[in-house]
Image 1 (cartoon, protein in one colour):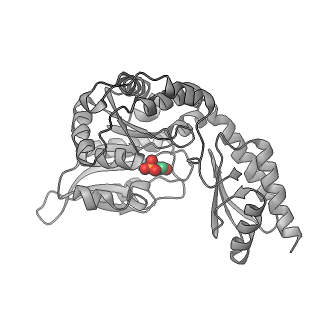
Image 2: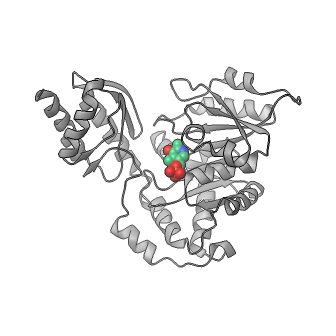
Image 3: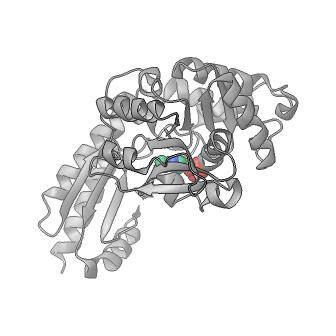
Length: 335
Ligand SMILES: *Cc1c(COP(=O)(O)O)cnc(C)c1O
């Protein structure tokens, strides 16, 4: 199958599985797993932070970070389109007693500075205490402008807020902007990075930040049920991904551009955006369900909505994209 639904669908390759089975392990709740410790230290160093902490998912990594930054009755500023706000089951509010203050994202994924400034509440018993600004990079595949990130985080800091980056795909952002990971992480107090997206590991995220913040997040990870035992088998996959699968994200980005160009040439399709490994396009509503079925019958998995997202990753080749474009053309030609 050619699976364009997400970059989470990658399967571990034989060399990644070999690295996993060769991993030296221990009980990580006791701090005994050397492979987990190595992953945490390696990523912290690459991201330019003091410490790292391994999590089973990005959702849990983000939530533990929010809970480390904010207490009960505190508030965090977050984009209306942000993953932590939209797609994590409301965990900050449900489990963290943290009030989200969602703010509309601009088309480039940023939250305009004046919206951030206007949403920071005065110290007053009527208001939740604004504690944190959370951004996301990439967001909808888009790389946040570096100048904007500097200004937004400086604004937050001037008002005494801390800053968190949902960097699930921050490696895509680093590769796309030809910058080291540390440069993209530098403006933030904490960053959550996923290995189970374009990097191709089966499981795992790492939160990086100061030693003090990671110590707080470590306690919340345990409370949230994220303390794992011989998790070095998973950390080994992430170390393998860090070593072998970061630079190759450039191929996914080139493939996404190729896919976008193919779709743009089809009369019935309206291309909305292409950035890093994501393409968004509109199809006539009436064609969405039948086209999705037509593609599935030809071994291509998509999620056809009015605004459809196509994601490239290491298990999608340039030939696969040509196959996909030909199938979409074939569908419309047969109408
Ligand atoms: C995937 C993702 C996460 C975390 O998701 P999990 O499935 O819990 O690992 C967080 N933020 C963004 C932007 C994501 O794409």
